[in-house]
Length: 193
Image (cartoon, rainbow, N blue to C red):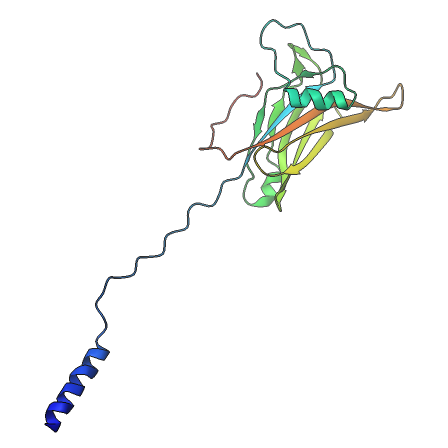
């Protein structure tokens, strides 16, 4: 009987050592792709009377018109449609050299100023900073900073010193709009239209 008792203890101990053959644990789900950056759009607005164009009239959205009127700007016309700026390049240093032509400097087929290019110069801590350069031979600049979330929008005035009156006056306004990340990268487009 002692042998039977010891044999049963040995069987129980053997079962305790044998691993339980149950269902394998499901692998941890793979992390999804990192969220893409929001798309940034810019539009140039000039402080001039809209031309009497029958077609191809570029729209000045109501939120832009209302803000410009609040700032005392009575006449204005859109020089461009919404132009997407490229997303940041890697490594970060390259973003300083990447720019997109936003406007060719022409309005209604006539030269109004120098070409304008733009890029995203900073994107950190939920904020984004956009810079546009051009308009004149001195390379005037307009920098706009806003929240980096879809729906954010901002208008900034570029100003220069008028040599005749020695007062600062706007040479252009820049509207910036943040949209959702693009579904798939867009092919390069011709923004000269």
